[in-house]
Image (cartoon, rainbow, N blue to C red; front, side, top):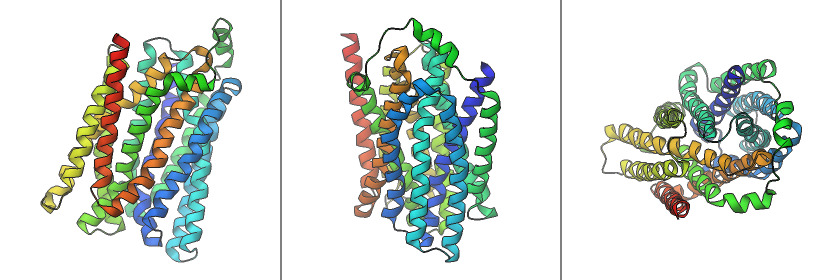
Length: 406
């Protein structure tokens, strides 16, 4: 069982590498090809909409077809998508494809990838839920979050390290990582359906999709707000540093990779704390603390980029603010998933995981497009909005804590 969970965690980490590296690599390269900032944001937002629509359905489908097939498909599509990205960007930089054609290829590939992830991520959470009970699900959810956080660290770091080898070297390297993870899953991840059938034989009937959504809405709202704010900042970090420091595409990629690595390291540290705590703290308490930290970090990031700040301090101060944000996000994500798992019956773990991932995907969809539009109006607006969203998440978490104690 330990080996199987290690394989699953590695697969999640590699998928996070694929996702997070795009934030550091794509924006400057797409600008060089001729894509507008709105088009770059639209790629993430439109593809995220497909994730939102597909995740609840595919999560429920995993109750019947098993978890492993969806994980296999997600990794296989990641291999192909990263290679398509590399080919399209090379063609665009060489002038073989126009900006519109490159936009269409990047958007289409990202849509297919996000639909496959709409099945993969709920399946991963449900796989852990199938093997754990009660308080251990908090640690299980935190492990998934820590694996994703580790991948989020490696994504910008890999992009930063491979960029000197070529503009598309990060995409090619990540394609090979995804291929290795796919092989490990095919060999080492067992199907849990026989054991799960025995558990379900004695389980009570659960809510349908609508009933689960009505019961879980506070946690879904916190996930949506947190994802929207986090992705908004991730998406705009490269743009902000490029504009502030007058960098070219390669320079912006390197500096954004460093700054986003600070965020990811802090996220992983906080998630590791949740794993160590092992369910000793209530998920709703961790969510409230995390939302407060993230709100302060977002506001600090907004203020650290003001014109009055000396140029030499721009990157260090913003990286420090991102680290504080990461601590908050690292508490929010696993505790939110644990709360959803604990509030859901055995027959609906896949459905609930799909709803949670849909909420996270909705935030991922809205964040880049909204953030880009606000950034064009005023460079501080999207980061102020991120702080407000985390403040709303804090208020909802505190409200749920009060209700739980009543």
